[in-house]
Length: 185
Ligand SMILES: Cc1cc2nc3c(=O)[nH]c(=O)nc-3n(C[C@H](O)[C@H](O)[C@H](O)COP(=O)(O)O)c2cc1C
Image (tube, rainbow, N blue to C red; front, side, top):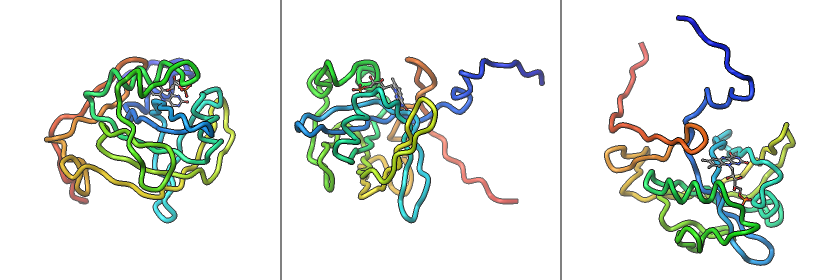
């Protein structure tokens, strides 16, 4: 198998596709915002932590650090164009709830709203922010997490739910309806 060198700045795309999530946050002024985030992973179960990689230039970064809270909302594949809007336009210039028609709903434990059209929600408070290269790692402590029973019970029901998986740029994919249990040999 011959393997071609790729530009180093393209290395992240060898790890994609990742879930494209919609992260909600709110400023001190009470105005909510939505940012598309693909670089987000669980990093600890006890205590429950996830890590999100965000450029400090994002308006959402300022809002998250102001209130110390955010919600990770999981959109289904059919929200791809709303995700592109939230990932290409800044809350500095747009009210993204108004522009996308997504519906803000009260969260259970934090001030930023959840997005009603998403199928799962992970409410977090900022535990730590770590400077790395051109992104900041925000470690979020998970305060509560909930999902639509129609789409998730122990794991996603792929016959009902099409995840929105980000490949690169404006390219997305989803999964096929196939779940296999692999036995340890
Ligand atoms: C699918 C997708 C995934 C993205 N993932 C990230 C990410 O992981 N980290 C990040 O800092 N920006 C990411 N972005 C870019 C931000 O969403 C984008 O810059 C956004 O307009 C910032 O909005 P804000 O200024 O309102 O915070 C992503 C964009 C898209 C379309």
